[in-house]
Image: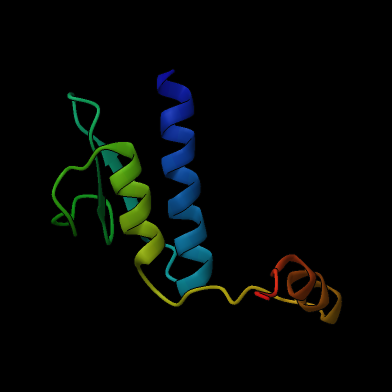
Length: 86
């Protein structure tokens, strides 16, 4: 179970590195199983130790956000999903 937890957290940090272009971000895990992020190994943490879901949400909120591509087919499909009120 611990492996899946750290994989999900490290994947979030990898996405942050790609979005920002800063490759020095470092994730660490406490003995209690909490996660925190720092700008580089040994630097002060950027957040308090957080549970996995809170940590992933915190990391995903940092830096520029990826813009989701939407095709014209997606837009037409979404229009069909919305029911018109009589």
